[in-house]
Length: 336
Ligand code: AMP
Ligand code: MG
Image (cartoon, rainbow, N blue to C red; front, side, top):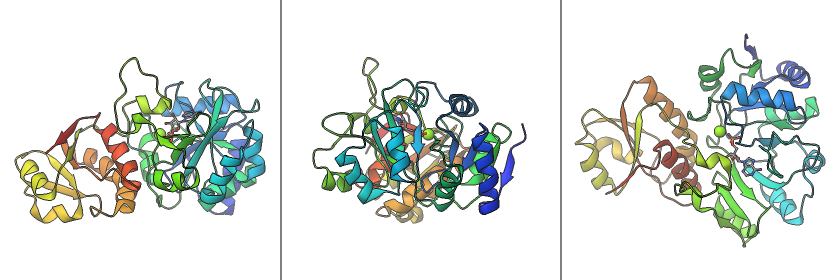
């Protein structure tokens, strides 16, 4: 199939909406990462998403809406606590899990009785939802398992010829996928950290905890609260190691690894003898989030076999970056 390139203006959005309404799939910009969108009410259209990405059928999708009326249609009950989160963080990079309404086909939620919902802040995404008048099921627009796409170029590298269209727009400003919090369990639980931090959510809903799978590998007999967390993820072809330690220890360690590349903080660059790419300052977690997936993709373009990544701190937005990196590293962590 030929993948249509659309502009991110009113005309491009109008064509994208027509494609979505007739059951097609379109890659769209959002503030987190590019998404691959289809009509969430159309089971056949949703199925095309799983096929194009090669996504396992048991990994549920997030449904994107543009107002609270549309959101209420897709969940059984938009609770008071959901309302509080929406008031504070929507539109924006927070996904809320609630009981699913019957209007949403079970395949969207991979057979679960819950549904994940988010109201994006990206203007192009919002207008597309508005113009099509439909909630859009949209996971990240990459081949399943590869680093998430933060530019239109990344999407085309993975999915050109496999999807109906793409809206070509700016690079994503957040750069990591949304925070996922489930209100369908007690206590409430963060299943995936993101730009909206645990600390910010706990200020609104103090009874919230962080799921242990955020930082740890699940054992074979443990069930993932978020099916997506059990897969190897975000991985370049290179072998990735996550390295925890101070600046000097990191320098001494990687300087012995001659044929490898370091993904490091800006502060590390001057000290390294091996090839190194920075993903932001040690304390600039926003830049780390915005940059990390692009850097992981670049490593593959360079044909590198082994990568050592200087681990970010595990708090605030750093927790989201750490969560993606530990998966890219298939949980191989070196503590210095
Ligand atoms: P992606 O759309 O690629 O950002 O992935 C969506 C993430 O949300 C995956 O990790 C899913 O496992 C998770 N997710 C979506 N819906 C649900 C749900 N109903 N219950 C638990 N996790 C979910
Ligand atoms: Mg994804």
